[in-house]
Image (tube, rainbow over all chains, first blue to last red):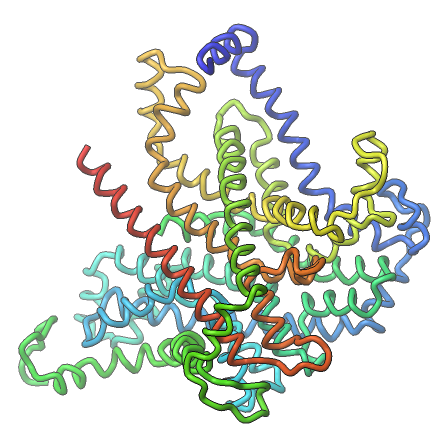
Amino acid sequence: MSEMRASSNRQLLSPRRRMQVASVFLALICCIHVWPLLWMVSASFKPNAEIFAGGGLIPSAPTFDNYRRAWTEAHMSQYFLNTLFVTVLSTLIVVLTTSTMGYAISRRHFPGRGLLVGLLVFTLFVPQGYTIIPVFELLGALGLSQSLWGLVLATSGGSFVVFVMLFAGYFSQIPKELEEAARMDGVGFSRTFLFVMLPLARPIVVTVVVLQVLHAWNDFLLPLVVTLANPALRTLSVGVYAFKGENYIDWGGMTAAATMSILPIVVLFLFLQRYFIDGLAGAVKG
Amino acid sequence: MTAPVSPRPTRRRLGARLWAARMEYLFMLPGLILFGLLIGYPMVASDWFSLLDWSGFDAKSAFIGLGNYRELWNDPYFWGAFRRSFFFMLGTVPMQMGLSLVLAIVLNNRLMKWAAVFRTAIFLPVVAPVAVTGIVLTLMLSPFNGPVNGLLMSLGVIRAPLDFLGSPDLAMPTLIVVFVWKWIGTTMVYWLAALQTVPDELYEAARLEGVKGWQMTLFVILPIILPFAIVIALVSAISALNVFPLIQSMTGGGPFYATEVMEVYIFRNAFASTAGSLPRLGYASAAGVFFGLAIMVLTLLQIASVRWMRRSTRDV
């Protein structure tokens, strides 16, 4: 049956023509994928009455009023800075901690190495629902539940194990001669890592940076829990969520707030697309 | 240092070996601290918390043994959420993997023009924050002035607006479709990476043998990318079980618990108890431990099947 259809297809349509048909379907799928983003940006420039009336994507009289409301009255300016702070600092922490650990477990021998690798693999797929209560309790015990630093620390744990694995996998492929040469020249252990090994691992550093930025910018459960009693510490995601709870009728303000949180990461993706996609693909191959 | 240190000391005493590796430990210290604080400690602490009757971080807790687990076992809301989590996974993973495989095969074809543009557009929702996307989609799917209903009505598909997220029958299927829409770009990129491991010579050889079209896909490409399929299925399954942001932002588990999955259930019990009742941290921990163990069993099963697949392909 399928063979028959395949052969009749081949007679009716040349491979090139078949790809053109496929393109039409793909274009349709792409429209579905891009539509919500376009609709959001479009609505963010319309007064509420115009959004509710439906109509085309081009606003009849574009207004920045929604943005002004979201930025000041809904405190999105504060949430934007919070998100930026958490994203940048947690990314720095993650790159430092996972690259050193990945290097040590892939290239050095020390007692307990097997145990450590075993523990890492064992915890690879622990769901957030398992750890969220102790993490929150821990932040309280450390006196960090009232500050952005607590959020920075907790956000660094998100994909910790995956990143360690990525670094370990990459370092284990680098020829040993490089380290030998550095040792002969009298270069110490940590300087070898910093000036020889880490620069070699630049592709993985970029991957980890991209994935952690994505994680920190998009995280929801953790910042939601941490900021339940502390609205001033909200991130963009939590801010937009709270906006819906408080002003569910203000679609203009909501879409403006949503645009502020989605657009920066989308623009970053469009510029660094290769790293995003290679990063994800690398994570599944490794 | 007088004698040259052998790279792998095996017979020396543990203390000496630990001391010899002091630089390594120092080097890993920041990572070890982070791992211990954010992953190690919480995993152990959750197990302990699950044995407590504990209502709020400021409240005193009391040890009650397996009382929480006993209560969970008889809690229909817990089993409902547990069942829904896996139902959601079974609803999304096959659809997401199948559709994205078709997309990847088409995009991988050399004759496809604009492949890069299509790939970018399909991947775009992946990078948008989930919870924010969820909020935007709630507006779009609204039965009152929502553009999705508007479009479907003007196309003549439906006559009256559908309450996608407000009706107990429609909410779950809607969330499943939204989830696949949101994450299909990731799976597609995984498949594309897998397809790129198929060597060009193989296509050529198969073509010379007269293999064409769908036969090529079925008998030449699929066997090679099958080992990847299990890894992709594992990653997709795990992500389908961690859907808190999407569901909390779109339905909050409603209507009438119709979309309450495990993480929403845990969140509700631990942090967002309904007015009047106290948060139940011990009870929520028990649910988290139970769910975590279930995921671990699932993971081990899938890793075992990867091993098995690799061994059987090596024998061929």
